[in-house]
Length: 434
Ligand code: NAD
Image (cartoon, rainbow, N blue to C red; front, side, top):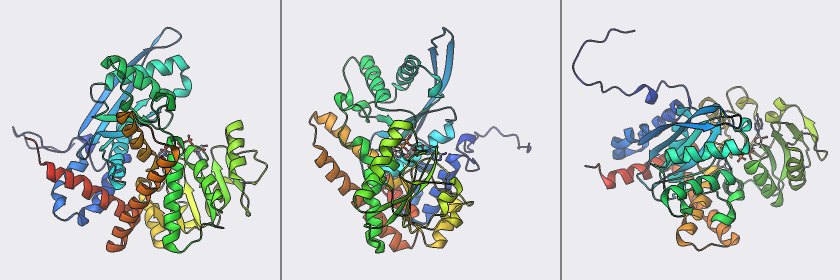
């Protein structure tokens, strides 16, 4: 330990959990923000705001298990920035959830919401729990206790949770009910991603995959690539990857390679995405699908394609496989699928990467529509929702494309520039209280 001079002065150093040396997701986020600093002009005086979450809540979530014992889980809700509107972001249930991860995800929500210009700040929540080890009753009790504990900072006008990894419409229904019971009135707008019968929105389930498709088409159009006949590979054939694949195929593209946690598939003439979706719904994965040939998992990344869609997990494209990737456009359906080192390799190879904060923002955009519909108690048709979603995604893509061309930077840096300028402009206009 270094010997610090003894002093009565207050310790103004940055708390350790905010440290830039943090190697976890929060450290990654800080490095991304630093890349943007030179482009912010006079707004850079507010940049420190983005390096400190506004509010961090850590809660104990005790529940009685079915066997009569009591278990304690650690839960988090982080509101990163609320300069542009209430906090907004999902809740993740996973045994590896950490504060660093939730902080980074909340910050990326601030950036995403600003990049697509929906009037929200960024927030995220999580519980360190393996939901597969809980019965349905235990899952409900965890959800209700967690919601009660974070109830002091969430609300339709303050912070609006949504589903994320391992949470779904049912979890949102329990959260909505718990919050409403505590308030003494039904508050449908406190969460989004609810079942349709409880104020959910048409089109929400497909929204992220549809957004991936829309920005993929925009990227293709601007680089002179025809979507019809384009070779597409998709990692992750769940909600995001499966829907995106189906839409690309309907537009005439060929789904030549697919990978999920059960295996990889290849078919040079393109596989039937709708039939594969049915197979996955029945069996739980792509393995065993007879409409394509099995492929070694490592080879998936080397297949020559026009569009590659990582739509599974974080950190899938790293310095280990980025050099082998042979594609023209990467559309990030997943959050954080590309490491910073891989980003640089892809940039040098001339691969156009459409970053997650734009590419997968379709979900939060239709969440915003759901919240608006809940407030007005007037619900739109699916056609209206899809049209509005397409417009938001196209406008976001265009704004980021323009900044990328202007400054000759990657689409990721450009998205951060657009988003950080919007957030910091709001901060400047509001001024500091008091
Ligand atoms: P999902 O659970 O429906 O699908 C996940 C897919 O990833 C599955 O096909 C699974 O088999 C695959 N997968 C898991 N582990 C894998 C591995 N080791 N190798 C290859 N494939 C693997 O989840 P989803 O909702 O489609 O989310 C996918 C990604 O998109 C996540 O990063 C999520 O954060 C992000 N995202 C989702 C939404 C949304 O609205 N669903 C919105 C924004 C971002």
